[in-house]
Image (cartoon, rainbow, N blue to C red; front, side, top):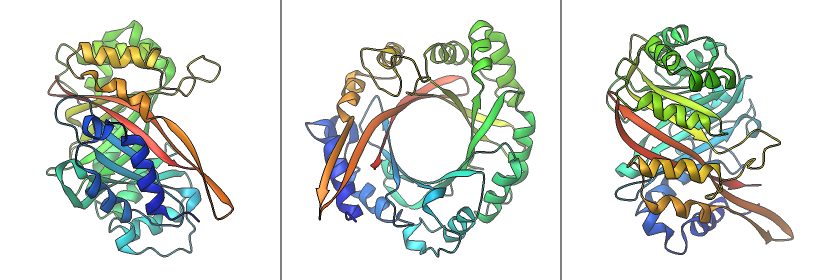
Length: 329
């Protein structure tokens, strides 16, 4: 098997070469390598996410995701290799209806001591996520999660929940996917979107939340809302909205980041809104699939731009970020 640290270093070097490190990644690489080495819960190479701001000083936060298929219920986990969450990984390895477990590291803040832990599920049963919160020693967040899910409009799916022990406050985050049918309804009826956001507790919509989310939903990409949930189960003051650059099968732009296509139009719109500069045009150059041969074997390293995320605080625009997904096949 190709040494995972070597594979990571090659992946990063390919993504960051030709001046992209200074333009996109900043100086976070040494800390990200430390984070990577603390995210090797099993023998398989994790899925990596690089979270990049699109304006201001370049930096990135680092995420490493383990898939349920990579783990077995009889495995034991060293705290040093799973972000300090061995019990969570043991729980995850024994579950059904779960997809991935993510360690999220604040490398942009210079902190790799308290990673967030996040669960991606394939069920609408809130008891699975509540069990995760219990084993992550955040049982206090389980009632808040149940309350939030009970507030959600019909047609929303809570796909992910996570806790951030290195950050102040309740730090429970939940991501929701409105159905495609509901997204189309929001595009036609902005008042319905506002009503549904207010239903979960977002009361400060400002002048841009609804209109910019509508613009994102008009693009041929899956759309998600992200909320920081308060102890009473209501949405907090920070709202996120993201588009994933995957198109429905059969469309011309399927599974591709094209700066001259729909993805580029959306990124250009973020720039017009004052949330990005020209660096987004470098994202297409981070996309690769590179085959390596070693010891008579081979592996393909890959990287591609996957998400655009916007954020608001109290209805006021905060920033825009891009996410790269990388790994091995």
